[in-house]
Length: 286
Image (cartoon, rainbow, N blue to C red; front, top):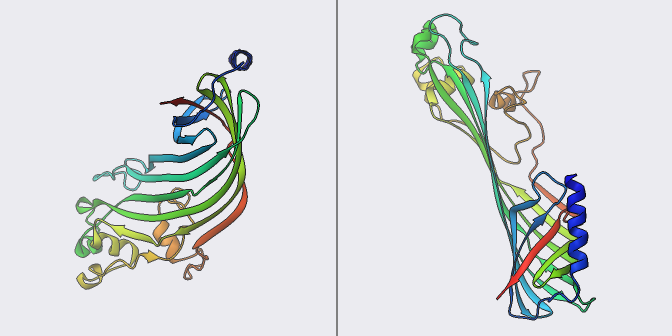
């Protein structure tokens, strides 16, 4: 029923669009994605602005923001130690964020009364970051570690973080259909080039002694104070959730106990189709 109502509504809009007013120059334009049959028909995660310099020329700028943060429990209360002291719940925190801008330019051509086809060019730029934090429970003193003084154990964190950036060049074609004065639906596709580079990913901890006892088998105060050798070139190729929270150990050693030799991804270059699967809906204003 929901899909049927959207279909009828779109049909009515097209029928009503006779002699609808298109851009004439000097207007501004705000646009979002429109997926009438999806769970969220209006998607505002990417917003496009246009300034029509004339009726056939427009400057465009797209802005997109994405952010997610999740917490998973990988050890329940008492799972590591059932008797007093009962071990606490330990969590894995995963975060990712990205912000993108894409300045560009459009040339519009004569179409039907309500149709405004165009060619365009844009330069998309994205800056992103990914981080993971894993909670551990264990000794923060070499003496406590040797004596197995569980009542002295503490919760401490080991983290992994990495940034990346993408820059591209897209050649686009599309069309806007004005079904009412200053209001349109449109599509867009094209050919694009993009290059992504990955920064070093860095292992960090909030308790250096506990970290060295756990991962480096430190048995002296000097060993426990060693700096974390935790900056690696290239993309992080594994996930804390898949690695059962032990991504630092898994990175230093493979399943045979040998140094981990998985090739790290440093950059990626693509040339291919650029297609916006959703319809575009926008309106003009002075």
